[in-house]
Structure formats: C-alpha cells, structure tokens
Length: 404
Image 1 (cartoon, rainbow, N blue to C red):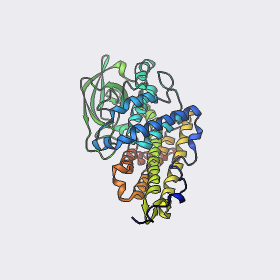
Image 2: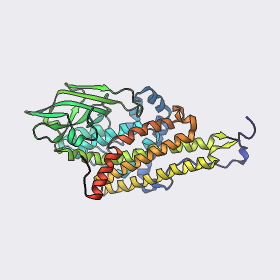
Image 3: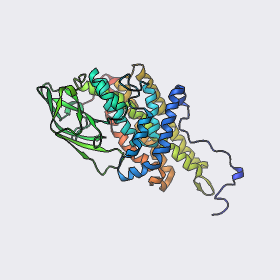
Image 4: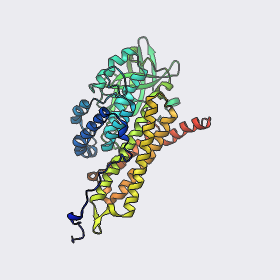
C-alpha cells in the first residue's frame, strides 16, 4: 500500500451520517412515537443485525430474539382495545420501515403476525373472538399466520380458491392445502380462508396449528426471506368449531379488506429494505478505497447514491400519505395497490444499485447488501404482484375491469 491509499487524517472532515430520511419524514411523528421508533431501531441494530445473516444462511428463525420483540410492545399497533397499543397506521408504517431497514425477514414475520393474522381477527372477528385471541397475540404469547395462498392458486384467490369448508352441525370440516404460509411451522394459529361448499363464498377460520387433521411441512430451498419459516399446510377433514369461524367474514370482499390494509405495510417494508441497502452502500462507499481515495468521491458512485436516495425519498412520501389516508378512513384498495406496486418496483431497482456499488463484495452475506437483494425478490411478489396491483389501479382510473 502506498501513501496515497489512505488519506491524511489531519485533512479529513467528519463525514455525514448514512441517513435515508433525507426529507426528515420522522419529524411528522410525535415525541412519544419517535421514542418508540428509536427503541425499535436500537433493538434491530444492536440485537438483530449482528446475528441475522448467520440465521439467514442457516435457514432458521432466531427464537432468542422473541423476548426482545415482545418487550417492544408493537404487535397490533393500529388496533384499538383488546390489549393492543392503539396507535396510528402512520406509526406502524415507520416501525415496519425500521424493522425492514435491518432485516426483511423479521419485518415479514411481524407483518404476518401483527398485520395479516391479527388484522383478520380485528376486522372480521366478533367481539368475543377479538377478546379471545387479540390480547395474547398482542403480547406475542400466541403467534399467528395467514392462510390464503395455495399450491395452485396465488393471484386468482378471489375466484379460484380450492380449499373447502363444509358445515356439519356446530363444526366446519376443512380440506385443502395452503402454501407459503409464514410462521406456520412453529406458530400457534392460522387464519385459513376456505370456500363454503354450500354458498360458494370465501369464509375465514381460526385454526389451531396442532389440531387433528392439520399437517405443516417446512418449505425448503428458498433464495429469499430464508429466516421466515414458510409452511405448506395440508388440511384433511380438519374440524373447526363454529365459534372459530370469523363472524364478520362472509365473502372474499372481507378478505380483501385485510389485504388492502396490509399492502400498505408491504409498501413501508419495501422502503425499509431499500433504505437499509442504501445506507449500508453509502457507508461502504465512504470507507472503501480505490485509486488512492474513497469511492464515495467518484462521480458515478455519487450518481448511484443519488438515484437510490431519490427512490427512497419518493416512495417514503407515498407511504406517509397513504398511511395518513388510512388513519383518516380515506384509503381505498387502489390507493394501497398503487403504493405496493410502485414501492416494490423502486425497491428492487434500489437494492440492485446498492449491489452494483459494492462490486464483487455485493454478493457476500458479510457485506449485508446481498441479503437485501435476495429478500427484495419476495417482497416484490407477495401480497399482490405488480401486475395485479396495476389492474386494481387500472380499474379505478378507467372504470373498466381488465381482470379475467
């Protein structure tokens, strides 16, 4: 190494922090809300970041982190009563982003449990059902899953759901399979969506994962979200009492209410994923030396960082406004669909640029960015592909449905 490879410390200025909140969106939160956001950030940086790549490589969930996650008290943030925090969806968005900024798998675990499973019960359950399940779920004493996708049915769930439910006295008999069900291999309950054989409508059922007739097989060989334990659930004459049928779920329109709310969460998660990759790439560029100076001083590297920051700032603005609309009761399906579609596209673009900036080091788990690149592929697809979200928006703006 010659003397030009390391700059003279005496000439060095304090470099700016790697902060993806370029427009200071966190300033929209109250002092109390920001304190919670900071607690989540500290937990993710101090407890999760040092170990998560190892668990990602091993395809395992870090169960030792659960007590710390429970202590944060963030499950069910936007739900009122029933032992839930009772915050805003805007706060939930920032919390989701902070989690995904370090790891998308933990963010997905959180979104499945707090958003999809708890959200199904909160939006579609009776008062008695909410009192039964939501308090222990808010305390993370009961972990939930969401069973909609099937081996042969993904985007076509509205009309093609193959899992059946047949009424037999005071019980329902469920038969079918559910695929890609996060948390199912070790969690406690799954909200299973099945088609009633009598009226053809989709209904929701809270199924205990260890019930007779329920078999869960771990999905192996994933290239993304490897920390999330996805299961293939097989239901064979599984009996569920009528008291476990969600009393407010009468058709797929009710399922769609849950999905619209949680699509907003996926949009926030994608911003967090992009932001994590950007901030790491920026810190890397500030310290990485080539041709005798930091690569952050090169024009092409600064252009990559500029493009990444543009994507993060613009999509975060979309998410903030979407959450405000959600809190005001103004959000419609097409609003959530637009956010999920555009934020995941821009995320995918951003993590690719971060990987490009790192060169060959970008494929190493030790350098973090490769994990964001891989996990972005899952976020891009789940809870509505770009194409499906485009058609939801297209129907709203043209007045014509292009769904087949």
